[in-house]
Image (cartoon, rainbow, N blue to C red):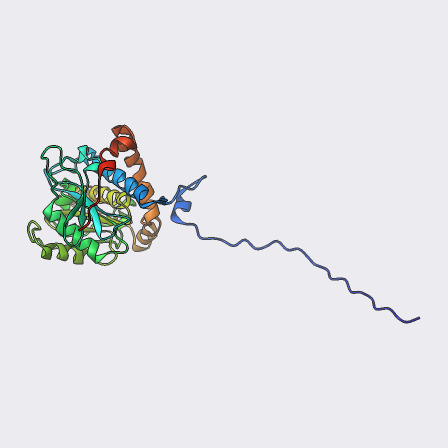
Amino acid sequence: MAPTAAASEAVVISQKAEPVEKELTPLQAISHGDVLPDIPTFVSFAAERRHILIHMAATFRHWARQNFTEGQSGHISVRDPEFPGMMWMNPLSRHFGMLTAGDMLLLDIETGHIAAGSPNPATGLRTSNRAGFFIHRAVHRARPHDVHSVCHAHTNSGRAWAAFGRPLEMLTQDVCTLYGAHAVYNQYGGIVFGTDEGERIAHALGTSNKAAILMSHGLLTVGSTVDEAGFLFGLMDRSCDIQLRVEAAAAAGTLKKQIISDDEAAYNFRMASEPHVLYREAQADLELEIEAAGGEEALAKGLDQLVIIRE
């Protein structure tokens, strides 16, 4: 009888896979339970524009609640999602607390041509802030890819700290959102009625900073959304107020300031300064303004009548 080959049996031992640690996004890291959503996306330019302009109006109303007004000073710009060579700005001489989406003016970034916008109900005119146009145009031209919104206003605490021509110190967890990401423009060229001063401000802001302190002038912040830029502006103004209070308390020499270390500040910056996080940070204040106004439809007033006429 011929010998038969014995079949060898393969023995497979099941092993539990080693868990692979996935680095959490900042939003995942701060969320316990359901993770807060990212910046929303839209099915059309019209839907995105509507969202942007409603949130722009809500940001202004929040500024009014925070007493960020100073006569006709102060402006926000947002790049249009469909026409990136154009930016929406608030009209001159209309109170922040009264603004709706339909009040905003669409300006050509290069020429200043007003391509859309309703007349100011008080004046019957379509007028933007000339100084604001030069500042915002320069920043948008210098940062076309990462900056979609610019905020500037003359707040009390911002102007007071700006008089020193110094950056903010990392005194609190919150100000670390601006760690290594805010500049100081330590010149003062007067009211911006020409291109040169706007370009100098944009140059001082740099290629990656989120904010700038303009000596003897005020504060400026930028962001990928109006929500981000608006929240950063408020955070920066409050940080100026805290810095002034700490300086006053420490002036007698009996108290010593404690500065957050570079390592800790850098960690806080990495977790808190991400655009999706900063968008979410703004939502509570903006939702309050939308609710107080009577809902999104109230803040969208006049938006459906806007017609964009390009040169």
